[in-house]
Amino acid sequence: MARRLDVTGADGIRLAAWEFTAEGGTATGPEARTASRPALPRGTAVSIARQPSGPEDRAAPPRPSGAPVLLLHGLMGHAAHWARAAGLLAGGHRTIALDQRGHGASEKPPGGPFTREAYVADAAAVIERLGLAPVTLVGHSMGALTAWQLAAERPDLVRALVICDMRASALGAASQRAWQDWFRGWPAPFPTLDAVHRWFGADDPWVETPNPARGAFFAEVMAERADGWHPVFDPEQMLTSRETWVHDAHWDSLAQVRCPTLVLRGLDGELGRAEAQEMVRVLPHGAYAEIPDAGHLLHYTHPRAWADALDPFLTGTLTPGP
Image (tube, rainbow, N blue to C red; front, side, top):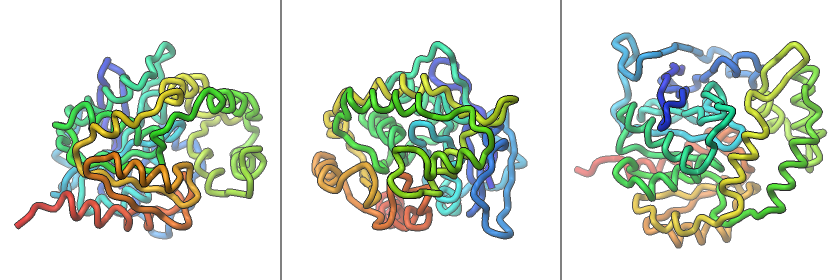
């Protein structure tokens, strides 16, 4: 189950977060409710509760006593992409996933900003306003970069860190141009949600072999309008967000992270093993894990293996000693 928390970001931006309260639940924001989702197991409980006034709610279920965890999705993602994985942590930890600015149910200001500084400041504001510090930050892709930059800048807010399939090396200008061309090649608006599944799961030139999970991932961030299905995010805002980090390497900020950090990759993901292990070496307190059958969307496609990889790290770093 999940309930919505409305939070104000660093510059007054309206952000939506989702607190998971039971295994197997799923979070659904206004945009996400319009999209078909992968089928939940039979009998799964789904609970949506809006909470406009902040985290304190006397009618809410008791919170887990374990250390809080904040989940940060990647570019184009949203909080509900963590649903199955987060549900496996919620029994022992207060587990919250944030829709970052420009994503999901959070505000998408036409003028931005969509800088690294804005994303990091939002995460800090959410931690402080929800009373999560010191928190365990778990980030995927772009969200992982936000997480480790925050851990480097504000060590008082972060107890531990998990980096999921994010490179520290610069991707370069060619990568940004490829993404611009990719967005322009989308056949949007999509006539049906099935067309979304087909395009991103099989027809997209970037898909080497059919990948139904990728199609499902993108179907979750589509909303229906009069002329068809559109992404809930603005592709130009996504390019702007990406522009602020693809040209620079991030080894210096990684080396400044002082808390225990797990670098987690999918064997077929975007973070190579050699670079991941170098990241562990650079980190003062780094650890390494990988999921053999997973790709970039490891928490989405392999939630149980993802949780199993996190469990010994969380147990070792978050459990108080005798």
